[in-house]
Image 1 (cartoon, rainbow, N blue to C red):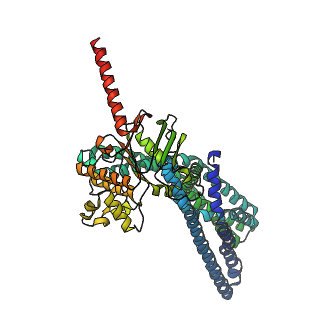
Image 2 (image 1 turned 120 degrees about the vertical axis):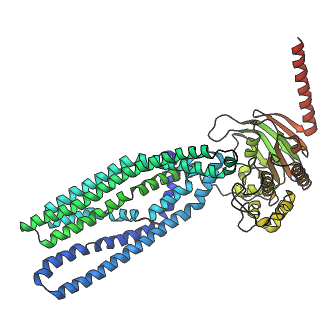
Image 3 (image 1 turned 90 degrees about the horizontal axis):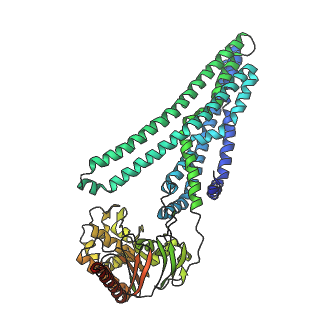
Length: 576
């Protein structure tokens, strides 16, 4: 574990320590369960050395009844510790579910971080390991030397054979870890890549079907899938080889123990009961090692998940508790704002400054890639300023809890994305029990109410992540209603009319006019002039630099005058 992920590791260890009492209980039960594992060898010794010699049926019945009771207790203890470990794993996952989910969202929003993409599956892999028999084998493993020492009590040669066999099995386990780590990691990465490509193709099925791309898409996916299968088979071959070798060696050792024990019986150095007991005890001693090797892929997956979680939690530390602020006025102030994309070094927006008062609408115009969407991400606190500040009613954006800030700032992104659920749930920002009055109010502000009620199921119409049967314009109206839900004070619209027809554009301008009348602030990032019709102010962005800001009419006049001067200069140059 690198020092970079040390904080995340400390957090994971702290959560795991919350179940310390459960682990102590499992350890206690494991002590008695392993003690009871001596039942079989001792029973064999008594049968061979006492019952067969004395031919006493009463002794056999008494021993057998005792063995039934002891095996019953051992089974009960195994059952209890399995249930305890299942609950320890569930407690670990439940304690981290919200934390990992938040960290995953925060990291995914600002960077394509691999640890963020697999955060929840990493947590699940660790939970499965905690709940699996493999971890219980770790509680049994310390008893392996004790069982081997017990074999040595029968005869030193038997102990030496057991010790050498155990050493070989441990060596095989270490070699398995060494040789299977890389193939397993490559298989996981390849499988994840193939699954990501499959999800991408499924989400874009409509365009793939419409443009005759099925063959090409299948070819790309098949290549990724074949690579994943090849890596998986290679990893399975490596792990399976060691597992088979371990099983074969264990069976051989038990037979060797019987053979050596038989020789010692012939020499009169041990009893027949000790010969059988030694073989059984060896099987018990080596069982945890064989179990761990058989489930080594799970151990490796959980180990990678543990390190990945530590890295994710370090990069996205817990958010500090913020003092609740009153609902702000629609007063937005940006000072010398410079934004660098996460993981980048070159600013996409430099030294931007402007003010927006309640009841005003600001249009942000500029060519593609000029920095308009970057500004939108900074104003919604998705990207943090490298330099400068963004203040809402005098308070910096990071003084607001992210969920609270989302209630104050409505956002319509350039690329509209809906979520699995009903239209009402989408408008209500995935609330499980949407406030019907607020949902309808937001839909009416977005001029989407009539469109929604004309659908067969109205607000209860279910949609998918790509919108289902909704058109691009309908999806954009739903997303606009989502941005207006719960009466935000600032509304940021990034290319809001890119999919709207003329009727939709008119409805959008009507909604912007109403927001201004209600004392809200509106920012519109746009290419099309129709989108800035209701704007009072205009901000011109070009190559990440704000080249003009002021009243809309004044800025437009200056732009036209500059354009005419440039044309005049060019024409004069042409005459010369």
